[in-house]
Amino acid sequence: MLKEFKNFIMTGNVLDLAVAVLLAGAVGLVVNGFVKMIMMPIIGHFAGGMSFEDLKIILSEAQLAADGSVAVAENAIQYGAWINTIINLIIVGFVLFMIVKAYNKTKKPVEEAPAEPAGPSQEELLAEIRDVLKAKN
Image (cartoon, one colour):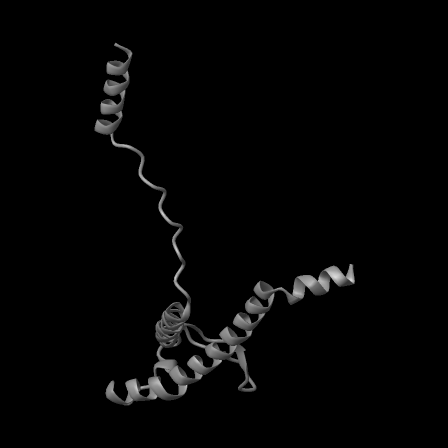
């Protein structure tokens, strides 16, 4: 059983999948950092110096207890974080598109099987039948 498991794990498809999952996680972290730390500050600068991460619609304010601690947390729709996520998705999609495009260029083209020779045409068959009938008469 251990030998079968080892053979299963060592097959190319499983190893390729494992590498792809690890790389996808790493690429996701890099892209998320790129969006959060580079792209969004630049976009925020040109949008009037705002931070998109802080954009939200407050549905209910936080309620404080008598000692000043938060008794009930603020309830808000954080659409700025959602904008960051959408930009992140677009960049990840573009990076994956470029990776797949580069991979497809390196793949060997699939050789097509040679086409079967075409059979006789309808006219040739009719001519052959005619010749056979003439030979019988």
